[in-house]
Image (cartoon, rainbow, N blue to C red; front, side, top):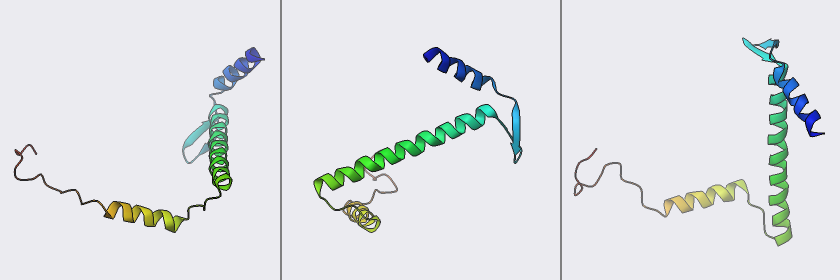
Length: 96
């Protein structure tokens, strides 16, 4: 089974002839297969992470974070720290 999969992968990688051109971008079957596969993996991973996080909140019985609540926490958190000076203090040697 592994040998068959490896031969399939090597066959797909050998398909480098351009098949379609979109906006001066030549795409081969290899580009299309790898792009669709990468999109699938990103989508699947995002859905699994979302399901894990949402399931975690449901198991704990805690409230879900809203967009406005998260923004408010960021604003409060960042406003509680003094701002970073744009120039170095005069007591330090001038290395800028």
